[in-house]
Image (cartoon, rainbow, N blue to C red; front, top):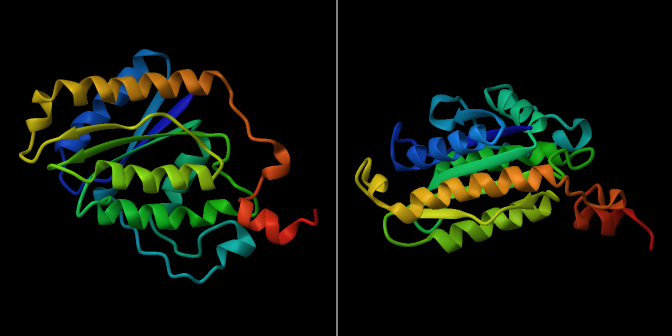
Length: 202
């Protein structure tokens, strides 16, 4: 089983990365093959809205997102981790999420994978951010664990938040258990519901 962690914080070695590394280490202890993608180290352009991917299933922009797409295709679990900025995810995370639109064609390429989420906020905004991810997982016909969260501002302060540390490990444990259960959507729903409604006669 493979789990890829997507680190969306621009601050290397910060609170978000500390929790993600802890979660990936826990998953590895449970037998998962893990890898990590740090978005701040990648060259990723915003989506152009060209819709060429709806014809090819591949993004027309040639940059580091192509490599991330491949990591996501190969993984059974995708664990996103982002700080909370203005009640939402970081800009780096949102750009990467937008660019996964290509993975919805010709069929949902992320379907039946398990999604996980780790959030770090200064004081608030975790639920708002989690709602966006839960809709994203649902739209892609993924299964998701409970999300884990922590509150910290100064670099490294999250290590004093015992709830956050235990939560990150717990999310990893849920992901591994979920993957091992082999959840699966019905094959007739191999596209999003909006496409299903437009394309199917029922």
